[in-house]
Image 1 (spheres, rainbow, N blue to C red):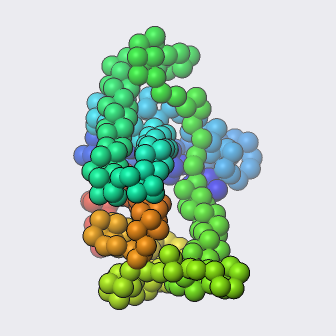
Image 2: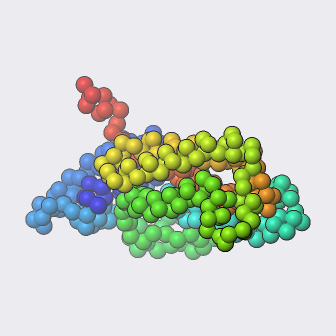
Image 3: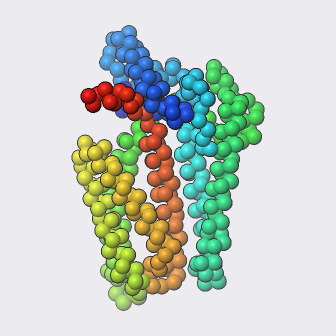
Length: 326
C-alpha cells in the first residue's frame, strides 16, 4: 500500500464519523493537512514517503473518532463503521446456525418448506434486529461516555453494551483484499458454473454407472425460463472477474459494471428463492434453497457494506471540482 492510500484510508474513516454535510469539506481539508505533514516527516527523516511513515503520521494525529469529535457532533449511526465487519460476521453466523438447526424436519418431511420459511426461517431475522439494538446501544454509550483520548481507558458503563474497541488505527487495503478474494473465487466460480450447468449429468459422470441421479434434475419451468438468464449472468460475472484479475488496471474502471452484475445476480436469486421451485425433487429443492438462502443473505450484506463504504468516501468539494473542470 502506498503512502497516499494510507492517508486516504484514514481520512475516509474520519469522514465516515461526521455528519453527511461535513464529510467532503472536512475530509478534503484533512487530506491536504495530512499530506503536508507526511511530506514534512519524510523530509525530516530524509527518505521518500512510504506506508510505514504514513501510518506513523496518522497514528500520531489521533484516533479517527477523536479527530472527528473536533469537527462538531458526529452524525448518529446505529452501527459504527469500525463495528460493521463484526456485525456482519455475527449476524451471518447466528442466522446460518438457526437455519441449519431448524431445517432437519424439512428434510424428514415432517415440516413443509413453506411452514419452516414462515416460522424459524424468517424468524432467524429477529436475531439481526436484536444485534442491531445491541450495536445501537453500544454506539450511544460510546458517544455519551467516550474512551479517554490519552490512555484509551474505557468507562465501566461500556460493559453494559460491550464491543471491542480498536487500540491503534491501521489502514485496511480494501482494494487489495478484493483482488485476493477475486483470485480465490475464480476456480471456485468455474467449478460451480460447470456443475450447476447440468448437475444431474455431471453426477452421472462422477458416480458409478447406473446410479440414479434424477434427484438432481432441475424443475422443468425453472430450467426453461429462469436458468438461461441465470447461467448467462454467472458467465458474465466470471469473465469480468478474469478480466480484472489479469489486467489490474481495469479494476477501477469496471467496478461499476461488476457491482451492477453482482446486484442483478442477488436480486434474481432472491426471486428464485421465493418464487420458483429449482429442483424437481422436493428434498433436493429444500436442501438447495437452504444453502441458497445463506448465500443470498451473505451477498446482500456484503453489497450493503460495499455501498455504504463507497458513499462515505471523501470526494473533492463541489466548488473545487467546478474549478478543475473549467
